[in-house]
Image (tube, rainbow, N blue to C red):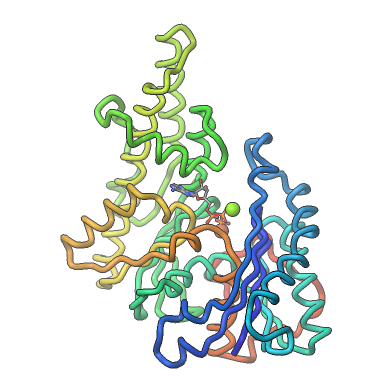
Length: 354
Ligand code: ATP
Ligand code: MG
Ligand code: FE
């Protein structure tokens, strides 16, 4: 089965074609990723320090058809070989989601093929299965750390997700982005804060580790953000209104150490509490080097295994949507939509899946 996937939930237009043949033959599912293209709007939103929803939707309209054409051209076979279309139905920006939904449903109607709305987080969650060396079996614990979400989940199969804990306020990626803003770094802040932190002194700032010992699997990052702001103001005031590059690096280091420690500690607790031994990390913050290093160490100590998506599939992309669509349709062809209206779900809890 060959599935065309379309992602337009936020500021990335993603298109990909996935074939399930290798996966069905017991080979790595990633071998079935036949073609993909991605356009990131980051440069357009940079001046605003974040994503402007109206600009995002308009840009998706401009990019989506050329991207689909590009992927079709680069993939062996053509439109006639596509068996189904999957698109991100939510959560995300309503206007942005509508672009992907309209194009997907329009194509499906024209081609007389099934079309399926995918939960964006399910896409992130299953994306580690696309890694070349993926040797991941259900059940596993998933740590989903993205720009809008921070959740620990128990995954027992495709479509079977139980939320074990989640953030009560900011998402981990959001905390990175806000810290970057306070330090005058570029958007999105994750990579910038991460790089700068490498030259920082780990003992200059001891930021709180929010909820590390709360006993549950929830997170909270709003207080950490406030502590960062307080320190930034303090150091700036003590230096006559100036924040040097090395002072910024020290703050970044303190922040990264704190957030990584909490994410790792809760992930290990989730594994112990569920009795599972496999951890899967997905979402943009999963690209973070410090998080990967620390998880590798802690998991090795407990004999847990930890898996990630290929680096380029950590942030939003069409491949994860095509793949999630293929897995869902394989499991249950009845899931193809019967609704031809453009019904997107900007807010959509992951445990509310069909
Ligand atoms: P959601 O999936 O929750 O709707 P999103 O799609 O915007 O949100 P992703 O694309 O998965 O989120 O990830 C983007 C986030 O990942 C941003 O907040 C960004 O700062 C963060 N990020 C990306 N690379 C890194 C990194 N190396 N270290 C830390 N954070 C990172
Ligand atoms: Mg994004
Ligand atoms: Fe995302």
